[in-house]
Length: 226
Length: 208
Image 1 (tube, chains in turn brown, cyan):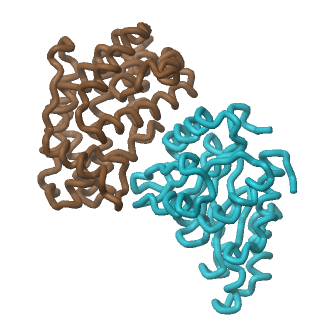
Image 2 (cartoon, chains in turn brown, orange; image 1 turned 180 degrees about the horizontal axis):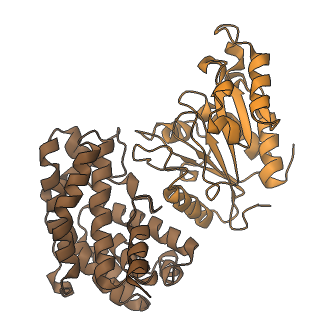
Image 3 (spheres, chains in turn blue, yellow; image 1 turned 120 degrees about the vertical axis):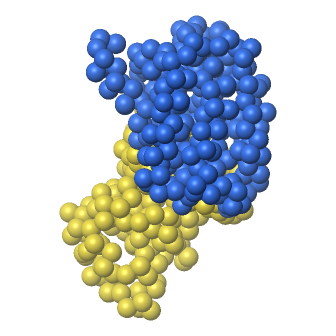
């Protein structure tokens, strides 16, 4: 990346909620929680904070960081992707991660992002699943973002997707969303800048949204994929 | 023969809720299959998989040729600003059925402003109906104006809803600068062959 403004513009483009990666169709349990009345407007910032701390930071962040470092090492990427698949015990989360990852990967293949076509070749050949954090690591390295910027984009896209889903579900207003993102920004920045833990440190524990995702899979009336 | 050079031709079917998109599909599918066209369908229901289930129940196609894509409450987005999930679904159909000629992508019911991404489809049609009012063409919605083919459905109802069908059709042709407008009554299988002809001519180079 030749300049700080160019890096910023790159992060803005690929972190933009309008970037066509299919993320708008996933609620990661939010839709069921809202339908069941288990999450109120006032509790939404804490919900997103919990997702960042107990799902993204301990799981997606570590896998995305390792994928970013191994962006041109296909066997390593396949192993990381397989690990992600094995560790996602909630079926709709695993399927959602695959669908969202493959959608994002498909866009980057069409855009010609370095590394995207090679990884998609592995997915098409059944050597990889195409999980979202692995794809994020590959493509954000491919567009030239350094690790911290790539992780910041990964965190922001997750938080932003939850905010827009909450708006569409009628849980929060558009200003609530911006306040939530602003409040979470220091924490996202700190986590993105930290040294990447080893794979043994991977953990995730968000039972409220995990159970909500399990229940969502059986709902006939739903707006979101999970 | 395909126009996009990488798999089956992709045709979008959009239009307001209740205009008859699924009914049109139910009539088009057997007609196109009868012409030897190998096809599959993707539906974008807003809240359920109702349209996909309706097509599966009708047994017009093998169930594995009918995919449903959730729209996340954004029926516009999933066919225009961010059609990646539809593109992934279409890509997967191309992989599973290498000889596929045509993929029909049915939008979730929307309003007159919906349009398809030109990166998603090779051709798209927009379905309105006379019961929605004969002022729809005059409202000049992007769907009415920009679609490759405008279909006015439920023409049998025009005497009962006070619609001057000839005027509605003339106004539709006028706002579309003469681009094609076809009339159908899907329940009676009326006008469907002309829609199939237009579609085949446009993307399959295979006429009636």
